[in-house]
Image (cartoon, rainbow, N blue to C red):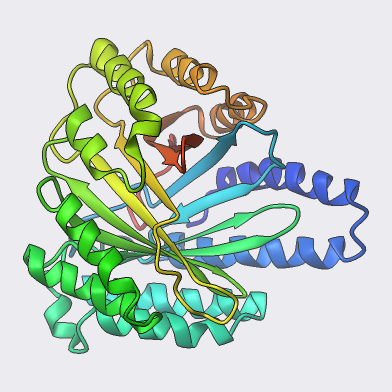
Length: 367
């Protein structure tokens, strides 16, 4: 069942986006508002309108406790226009992994139709072909399937897909990554990928692929989970000139160590961004590294929210959106837990994203 609090939160957050649209005097604002509402409902329907679960048939992956939705806010040094950002794990845990993948792909197709981006479906299918086995029976023992999401801002909307890679040995996972990237590139991607494999393999293993869609597939992100994260291993895995962020990474790691203790095993996931041009050709470079930190272990600590504000201040990020984001979550859901925080590295620390799980939501399909 879709709980009213979800729509209440959506209305509060999307109102900020639509106010920004109206400020731009955009003539199609009413049509855009209707499309936004359709996107939101098309994410909710397969996630919450599902049969009650008696016996879980798969493990939840977006949140450990089974909550199938996470909201986020992105902070940069410049004051960005508000955006409504959400990720969902469709289908509930009362279905198998093959069924969850099928459910998510059906929902993704509907989202693309709403946006009029059906041409992107062919690109998505090419990626799916390399990530998941053709025989659905082979998916039965996989750990997770597909998450879906959107980012709705005043000037553009993006759809997101997150594909699980947590199956098979290291070589098999890297092969699937290589197959996806070479699908959209020529031989020029090979040395970039080879360098990344050499750089990250001592510390991390592929765990997922993210797809960014805006009209067509515009970005692919490789996620690699770190086995034993530390300041040294993080620095070793940053793409590009890591010396540019050496002091920033030291401060960040030391701040977490002093306040919450050492990083837990597999608590950091690295993201590597590849962009596609308007012709759908993958560019042979990594445009950004992301450092995603799982916060479940210390998000309830008394000093965690002050730590977030300290982080914002240290990197001179605009803080106009974080307080209202957390306030709206508290208002609609009686609170939230920050699941992840993510630092973007692009010649410097260029953004912070905070991902929060709402309270007062039953896991999808629960009685």
